[in-house]
Structures are given as C-alpha cells and as structure tokens.
Amino acid sequence: MRTVLIILSACTLYAVLRYNIAKDVDWSHLPLFIGNKALSLAALGTLLFTFCIRPLHQLGMASITPLLDERKIIGMTGYLLVFLHLIISFLIFNPAYYQKFYTDSGKLTGAAELSMLCGVLAFAFIWGYSRRFQTFLRGDAQIITWLTSNKTLFAAILLVGGHLVFMGYKGWLTPEKWPWYLPPISLVGFVFVLATLAVNVVSHRKIQVNLNYASNTKVNLPS
Image 1: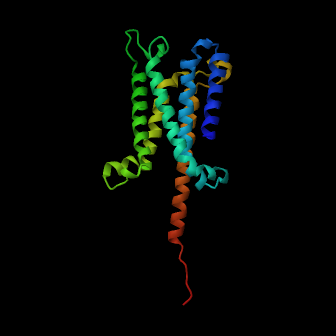
Image 2 (image 1 turned 30 degrees about the vertical axis):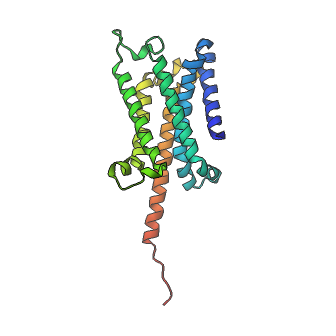
Image 3 (image 1 turned 135 degrees about the vertical axis):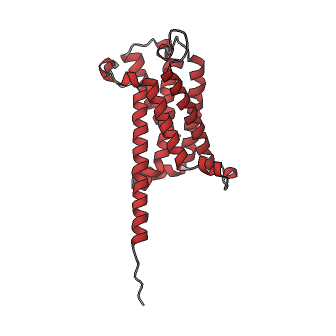
C-alpha cells in the first residue's frame, strides 16, 4: 500500500500544481474535477506499475524484487482507483466541465466518443486480465485463456493509450499554452503507457534471447 500512497500523493500534488496553482482553477473544483484528474493519473500509474514489476525484475532491477509479492494487491488497488475514476467521471461529465468534448448541439464529438469507447474497452480488458489471479477461472476454456494472457494485457494498454490520445491530443500540440509549461495529465499518462510498453517489450525480448541461447547451447557430457 505504501507504493500506491506514493503514486496517489505525487499525482495529486501534480494536479493541484498544474490546475489550481498554475492554471488558477478555482479551489472549489478540487474535490471532484481536479481530484478526478489526480485519481485518473494515479489509477493509471498504479496499474501500469503493476504491469512493470515482473518485467523490471526480469531485467535485473533488484530493488523491485520485494514488490513481487505485493503485485496482486497493488493491481487490485489500481483497479479500484479506476472504478472510482469512472464513477466520478459519470457524475461530472457534462458540457459545463468538459465543453471541448461536446458539439454545439450538445452531442459528444467524434474524438470524445472514441476516447470513451477505448476507456470502457480497456476497463473490460483489464478486468479480464485480472481474473488470472482467481484460481476458479484457471482452465482450458479458450476465452479464459485469452482473457488472462499477455495479449489481453497489451491490448488493454494500447486501448488506454487510445483513450488518452483521443481525449487530449489537441492540447499536447500547443506546449506554449501549458500553464508553467507543465504538460497535461493526459500526456503524462500517455508517457506512462509508452514506458510500460517499452519495459514489457524489452523484457520479453530478453527472455526470448535467453531461451534461444539455452536451446542452442549443447552441454557435452563426459563419456
């Protein structure tokens, strides 16, 4: 839980600094509007960190080893934070708070709809992947095998990236408008996604290289 608290505290401080202090958003919006931004980044950071613990261990990062036993609880907490983020988002998702996501007729823009779709699918995929920790779902059924595979994990990470891109890519292209040159939370989250993909890909390739080396190495036993 210490890891989650550190991530949550860092994300909250960043959200307050960027929006309440640098951007001068009224402090009355801290409980839900700004708090939800911090919660979304913390939820993303916690889940993605969970997906990086084993790969980082496999890459030789000794300091990460003690967290291997905590991976399950960190992941469950991250999933809970995502769920809270969804609830708060539904409460405040309207033109008054998110005008850029709505057209003049009051409907969602195309980018907003794609962002919401990616977010919902990512949530579902992460739920499916998390079932690998439930022993009663471990079986030979094809759908269960796929849901709890690394392919589902990578699909979920890519969908999260899509959710962030469609949500805030326009703001990413104008750094001169960033308050105090602090990047939007959606961009920070996207960097987390790229870093997670990079760690997992590098780790996977290292494992494959080691396996290939082991299979190609012949041990000559004395006759």
